[in-house]
Length: 269
Length: 307
Image (cartoon, rainbow over all chains, first blue to last red; front, side):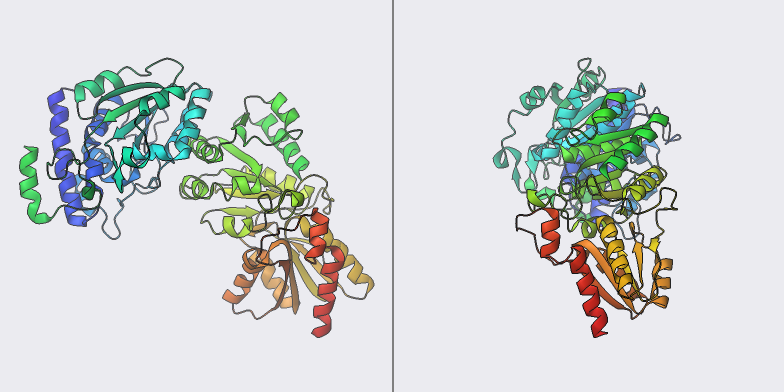
C-alpha cells in the first residue's frame, strides 16, 4: 500500500476517534491517537488477517495489551471491514458491544479481552509458544504501552519468550512517554528501555511510531533476528494529530467537546 | 492425592500429547518420572506465576489442554487477577491445580496455608471448584476435567491421604458423593477431611447415632439436588472442612439453603476467620481447632444433645 493511502486511513481513524470520544464522553483519546499509525501499518500491510475468516487458524494474532486504547482498535477494525463503521458511534454507550476496553467474546476481530496492564505479553507468549510447538507459521503481535513496562509480569514473559526462542512473537511498545499521573520517566526510570529488552534476550529496534516508512521497514523484516523475539519501540506523541492534546497529561482523562470537533478536524486536514 | 494426580496425568498424556503440565518450579520427586517420559509436555515455568497463568491462557486459546501446578497460595492468591482476567473472563478451560489444601503445609506457616482459597476461587464467574476427598476422587476428577469447557480449580492435599472410596465408585464432577448413608444426621465435607468424617461417623454408629457422610468434591457448581434431598431427610446437618467456614463450603451450603428459604439446622465445623500463626504439624493444628476426629465427634455430640 502507498504511504499516502495509509496516511489517509489514519486521518479517517482520527476522525472516528474524535466523534467516538465526543459522543461517549470517554477518556483515553490521547492514548488512542498515539497508536493510530502502528495499528494501521499492522492491519493494512503487515499482518495476515482476513475479516471474512475470523477463525482462520493461520491468521496472525494481535493483542492490544494497552486495552484502554480500544477505541483506536475498534476504528481500525471497522475500517478494515471487521464490522460496520456505524457501530463506532455506539462506543461506550449502554448496551454497546464496543466498550472502553476490548472484549473478545463480543467484538469481531478482538483476540483477547484486556484492560488491566501487564496481561497481554504473557498471553501472547503462550500463543506464540503453542504455534512453535505445532510448527505453525502465523505470528503473534502485542502492543504494550511504555508505562506498562513497569509491570513485573511483562518481564516474566520477556524471560520466557527468549528462553523458548519465540521469534514468531512481536511486541510493539507505544512509547508516548506519559502514563496516568506523570511522565513515565519521572515515575519509574525506563530511560534505558531498549537495552533492558536486549538484556532480556530480545532483538530490539526503535522507530518513529508515526512514520509509515520506518514502521514498514522494521515490521516488514520480522523477525529482527532469527531465534529471538522481536520488540519495536515506537516513539510516539500522546494525543498525536490534535495540537491541543499533544503531549498533555490531562488528555489521558478529558474527552473532546462536540462543539470543538470542527476545529479539531481542521488539524487533520 | 498428589501421587494420584500425577499417575492420572501420566496416563492422560500417554494418550494425548496435546496435554501440558506447567509448573511453578514445584514437583521435586513428584514429576521426576513424568518429566523424563514427556519432556515436551512438561514445562517448568520458573518462579513466574503471573506469566505461567498468562501463558496457559494463550496456550488454551490455541487449543492446548493445560494444567498449571503449584502450592495453592502461589497459584491462586498471587495470580488472582491473571486467573480472573486471562482465564475466567476469556472462558478458557485451563486447569489450575494447587497442592497443600488446608493446613497440609502446617509447619511452613500461614504463607503456605490454604484456608481461604475455596472462597477466593469460587468467587470467580465461570470457575468450577473441585476439592476431591481421597485419591480415588482425585483420579476420577482429574480424568473428567480434561473434558470441561470451563476453567477449573483442583485443590489437592499431599501424599498419603487414606483411600475412602472403592476404586470403581461412581464419581462425577457436579454430583456429590454419598460415601456412607445414615438416618440421624448428615455430615457434608470436602477435601482432606473426608476420611476423618467417615471415621467419626463409624464411631457415632457405635454410640447409636447413624450419620450420612457426603463428599462434596464439587464446590462450584454445588449439587443442589443432593442438598435438597439431605434437607428433606435430616434435621441436623454438619458442614466439616479444613478451611475457614465463613468463606468455605459452609458458606456455600448456607447460601444455598438460605436462598431456597430452607430453614435447616446447619452447624459449621471448620476454621475461624483467622490466620493460623501457631507453629505446628497438620494434625497438631487440627487438634487446636477441634478438627481432629475426636474434636469433630465431640462437637457433633454436643450439638445433638442440645437439640
